[in-house]
Amino acid sequence: MIATVHNPFARLLRQGALVLATLAASAAAVGQTAAKPLDWPKEPITFVAPFSPGGGGDTLARLFANELGKTLGTTIIVENRPGAGGNIGTAYVAKAAPDGNTVIFGTMGTMGTNHALYKKTGYSPDDFEPVAMFGSTALVLVVGPNSPFRSVADIVAYGKQHPGKLSCAFGGNGTVSHLACALLQQMAGIEVNPVPYKASSAAYVDLMADRVSFMIDVVPPLAAQVKGGKLRAVAVSLKQRISMLPDTPTIAETVPGYEIFSWDGLFAPKGTPMARLDKLHDATTRALANPEFRETMANRGYTLASLPRKDFAGFVKKEYVRMGDVVRKIGVTLD
Image 1 (cartoon, rainbow, N blue to C red):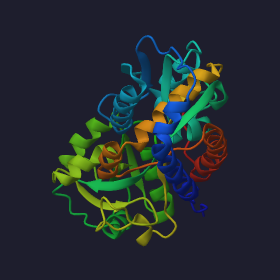
Image 2: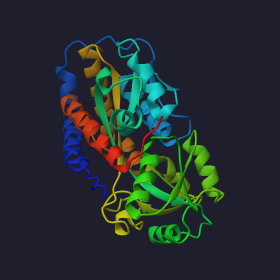
Image 3: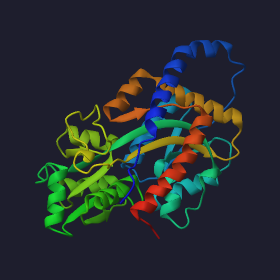
Image 4: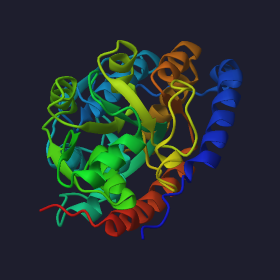
């Protein structure tokens, strides 16, 4: 029996919300007392998204890059370097010049689970400076608009009655979407055929056409599809319902103890000058405190949370251990 995937993020969310409120209120005062501003960046910053264009991670990376560019006062170029569950792009940034001009969109997967999924990732979390927390998001189980499945109970019952007939789509082996499928299979005691895609966007097309049974993916890229009726939300992955989908039950209401979520943050190569890390962190914090941006992300089902750099670094280390344990208990391995 797998141990419950507890959410250690709740306390950090409360702490992060307090940090954002405090920093937003004191922004003007900080500006008045600041020393001579750092004359950097002088050129565009490359923000690597280690996923294919159009998928969940890419969508989030572009939203954050756009807002960060505004507060940093420079152009942020999003560069997609997909492959191996995010390992290829992340390893690329690990070897980049430690000057702050190349940064990475880090996730629970690339910084927490991949070391347990792959024999070799090409990098270690220790190769990076954790710059700033972005926040976290629930996942949502979705089906096509004409699917006969109206609930998790429907899916579980069908899986037990028709072994080997269910399929779960996900955008890339080793992603949180992949782990969510594996976790449901194990905890519900059903057989689910994994159907990996190079990009989540390609999976959405087959899901809408009912060529796959269901998908469990992060909420933000699916929000528009669900609101537009192109996909139907069946259940969410947290133990409590989420504000964006208040009438959508949780998977745990049918499969007790089920819970999985994703978190994201900004990382720079190890050795990046402290002053540049501080400037990136401060710019990110101001971006997250923007009321319009907060509303935009809330509407997409994403919870923003800023943490001091030291606390974020501690959180990343704990997640490295926690998610490694989860992967081993699920029994998913790659290569």
